Image 1 (cartoon, rainbow, N blue to C red):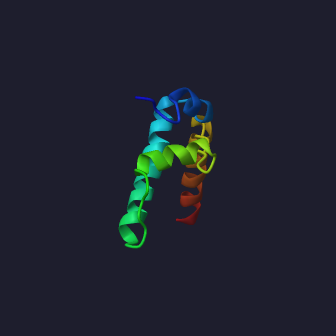
Image 2 (tube, one colour):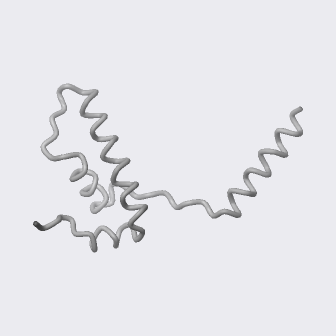
Length: 86
Protein backbone atom coordinates (compact mmCIF):
# COMPACT_ATOMS: atom_id res chain seq x y z
CA UNK A 1 0.00 0.00 0.00
CA UNK A 2 1.42 3.38 -1.00
CA UNK A 3 0.97 6.41 1.16
CA UNK A 4 0.34 9.71 -0.55
CA UNK A 5 1.77 12.07 0.26
CA UNK A 6 4.81 10.07 1.27
CA UNK A 7 6.33 10.47 4.71
CA UNK A 8 9.56 11.81 3.20
CA UNK A 9 7.61 14.51 1.33
CA UNK A 10 5.69 15.45 4.47
CA UNK A 11 8.90 15.66 6.50
CA UNK A 12 10.21 18.21 4.00
CA UNK A 13 7.32 20.47 5.01
CA UNK A 14 7.45 19.74 8.77
CA UNK A 15 10.81 18.16 9.65
CA UNK A 16 9.78 16.86 13.08
CA UNK A 17 7.61 13.71 13.06
CA UNK A 18 6.04 14.58 16.40
CA UNK A 19 5.07 18.05 15.18
CA UNK A 20 3.81 16.61 11.89
CA UNK A 21 1.48 14.19 13.67
CA UNK A 22 0.19 16.92 15.98
CA UNK A 23 -0.45 19.38 13.15
CA UNK A 24 -2.16 16.76 10.99
CA UNK A 25 -4.31 15.49 13.87
CA UNK A 26 -5.40 19.01 14.85
CA UNK A 27 -6.32 19.87 11.27
CA UNK A 28 -8.18 16.56 10.81
CA UNK A 29 -10.21 17.20 14.00
CA UNK A 30 -11.06 20.70 12.75
CA UNK A 31 -12.22 19.31 9.39
CA UNK A 32 -14.32 16.59 11.04
CA UNK A 33 -15.91 19.06 13.48
CA UNK A 34 -16.80 21.44 10.65
CA UNK A 35 -18.38 18.56 8.69
CA UNK A 36 -20.46 17.57 11.73
CA UNK A 37 -21.72 21.12 12.26
CA UNK A 38 -22.72 21.67 8.62
CA UNK A 39 -25.20 19.03 7.39
CA UNK A 40 -24.76 20.18 3.78
CA UNK A 41 -21.01 19.55 3.84
CA UNK A 42 -20.18 16.05 2.62
CA UNK A 43 -16.55 14.97 2.78
CA UNK A 44 -15.20 13.23 -0.32
CA UNK A 45 -12.08 12.09 1.55
CA UNK A 46 -11.25 11.17 5.11
CA UNK A 47 -10.30 14.13 7.33
CA UNK A 48 -6.73 12.85 7.83
CA UNK A 49 -6.17 12.63 4.06
CA UNK A 50 -7.50 16.16 3.68
CA UNK A 51 -5.23 17.39 6.50
CA UNK A 52 -2.13 15.82 4.90
CA UNK A 53 -3.08 17.36 1.57
CA UNK A 54 -3.40 20.77 3.27
CA UNK A 55 0.10 20.36 4.72
CA UNK A 56 1.60 19.37 1.36
CA UNK A 57 -0.04 22.33 -0.40
CA UNK A 58 1.11 24.81 2.27
CA UNK A 59 -2.45 25.65 3.34
CA UNK A 60 -1.38 24.67 6.87
CA UNK A 61 1.94 25.88 8.22
CA UNK A 62 2.79 25.21 11.87
CA UNK A 63 3.71 28.13 14.07
CA UNK A 64 7.30 28.25 15.23
CA UNK A 65 7.57 27.15 18.85
CA UNK A 66 8.70 29.77 21.32
CA UNK A 67 12.14 29.31 22.73
CA UNK A 68 12.32 28.61 26.45
CA UNK A 69 14.12 31.90 27.15
CA UNK A 70 11.34 33.88 25.43
CA UNK A 71 8.66 32.06 27.42
CA UNK A 72 10.45 32.69 30.72
CA UNK A 73 10.91 36.37 29.84
CA UNK A 74 7.22 36.75 28.96
CA UNK A 75 6.17 35.08 32.23
CA UNK A 76 8.46 37.39 34.21
CA UNK A 77 6.99 40.44 32.46
CA UNK A 78 3.43 39.28 33.17
CA UNK A 79 4.28 38.71 36.83
CA UNK A 80 5.83 42.19 37.08
CA UNK A 81 2.73 43.74 35.48
CA UNK A 82 0.45 41.89 37.91
CA UNK A 83 2.54 43.14 40.84
CA UNK A 84 2.25 46.74 39.64
CA UNK A 85 -1.53 46.51 39.31
CA UNK A 86 -2.07 45.41 42.91
